[in-house]
Image (spheres, rainbow, N blue to C red):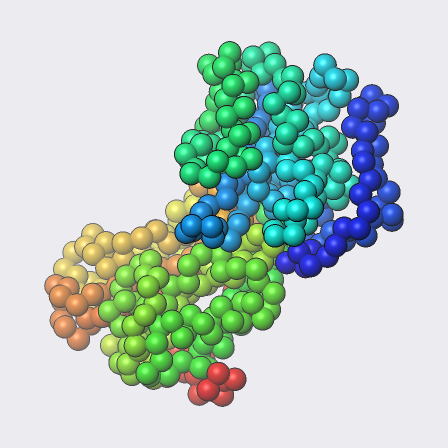
Length: 473
């Protein structure tokens, strides 16, 4: 991340309570902390907080906690990843924080007037040597443009009469955060929040807030689509490079290394999910992530991957013949999946039901497998195509959404597959053929846009690309 290496040399203290509602904001020109302007703008997050506020009933408050720090082993933590809802509303990528969004303007006993309040970890030079620069309350006001931000240590003494609200909305994931082993600032914030809730527990609501956030996040703004296109293009580049580099004798983890090298080279912070590189019999394991098997010339490789760029992830799957050529049986199964996928993409139009792509794809696969004698009843298609065809995509690979009729701005996947593991009740010539093809689709006013169309899907195009030289060969 760009801002990890940047240094804050001058701090300006903010009088949060001066001039009633008007907060004193530090002079940006006088502080050399450079906020990463390649991220979503503060206005984006401000607008999302207002959209949430507009959707809340009167006299209510919504509460969000940052993701906890997760311990990997001993004194080593997992790489931190912010809670998507928290990031969506704040832009803050630091742990140990809690956000309050109020429906109406609130006036607190200390004179502060605001309809939003962020508590976050304070600046600490000794800790920042180890973990990097923090924004602090001043930085949250200056760079994230919050109306009010205080240090987490202020939360204990901050008078907030939660019982005065008719509804207190808290995400259900809070229970998981409460159980974290790490007794850190976030744990203390949660304990204090529970104490402040002691006279208002009957007003806590979970489902309503989840519904509101899903309704907001399922429609992607132009700013979000810019980041999603970047993530998807990076992912397509990785698939293309793998097509060029793949060869018999390679290990699954070596194919994974190529994928994730291209991600990092192009600027992705992380994979959006554990990369799935399953060859041979592993191509029939839907969420296979061990990635240790040596690949033979007879193996198909399912490459289900997604780069994450500034919080937004792609999800693109291609199925490749390790030796560069599909066998006749592989071609037959592959083309069925491709036909099914196209049928699903064709119905990705506004007003259609969310599950229409799945139904269209399933009908194709059932009909074709029946004709091949792989199944003897259409309903047995579930033996070889056992997952849904579509999910929302965004800040999560399986992003939040309401699964209502498709709307302009939805981004969904279309990913049918056929998986015939060894021992299946069909001719053994089909065994260990696993094929999945997945693309990321933007719902528009007209025809669906295949955002991941850069990565070839047709057999001829894949085989031609696999003949090209790779920098990894």
